[in-house]
Length: 233
Ligand SMILES: C[S@@+](CC[C@H](N)C(=O)[O-])C[C@H]1O[C@@H](n2cnc3c(N)ncnc32)[C@H](O)[C@@H]1O
Image 1 (cartoon, rainbow, N blue to C red):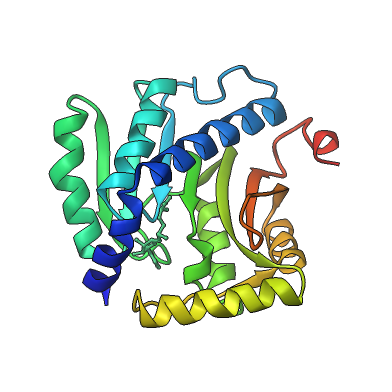
Image 2 (image 1 turned 90 degrees about the vertical axis):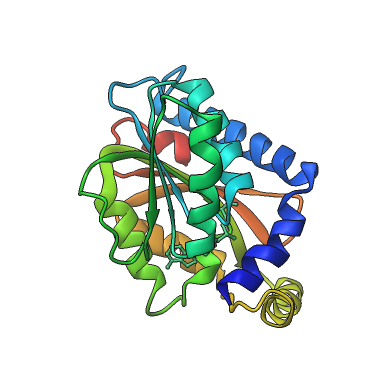
């Protein structure tokens, strides 16, 4: 399953349009965090630590590493994925492209990972929530993100949400393709459900539409981040 998914989805990810999309989303998320936290460069902090939570493979990981080191060259970067081939490929490529940087590769299930509490400033991922069954696994994922993040930590992500019957139909087609082409199972929830979950686990989230009708962009901060709540309303 892992290898099929890595290879088939990888063909899509090697497309330069995909990397351009990621770069745009990273910069967009950066600007939203800067606005919410009143900082010109929210990544410019001592011991700044970032986590790519699910990487698919070396293309995404390299694009993210380039971005994060351009904002803070001393970032400690974790790259985590459950898929052995994803982490092997990242380990083969990234240390050569980014010598002298601190990059930690973890081939682990995020639900039960080894990253210590309160150590991460920034979590980024794209299309990750969809891998988690909404009732039993998704709350555990959000709880894990909360556990790892420092009180001033933040998250940027994009994922599937549905708001109406058209969205549910599109997602049903995506689920079919995921199963039969990429050999994976994907899930979805409504926008209200995911926002409620973030709130229950101590986060505020800002949501924006993307060009794809069932995909939403989330910028998420801990409720403990002072002085930002009004900006979200
Ligand atoms: C769609 S990719 C996300 C890619 C990447 N986050 C990005 O920005 O493009 C999802 C990745 O999550 C990984 N994954 C799925 N379930 C996981 C879990 N429980 N723990 C860690 N990684 C997981 C998959 O192996 C896959 O590589």
